[in-house]
Image (cartoon, rainbow, N blue to C red; front, side, top):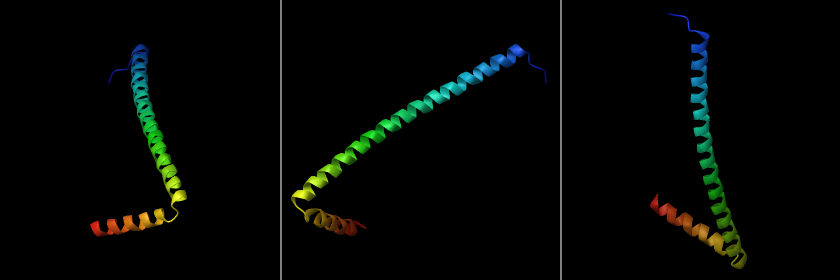
Length: 78
């Protein structure tokens, strides 16, 4: 095995830095996409929670009845 010159080692190190930088950039983009999707899902969840609160405040027993009905329907499928 031959010894590498300092210039060759530096060139290899630079290549490795570029490779790792590209990996970090890719992971950062994936993370940004995941965070955006999470924010979207949280928004939808909050909207459903708000709608459920409005319905429940207008018709107090409806949510319990709906939950019971849903559990019965799910039980028939299983």
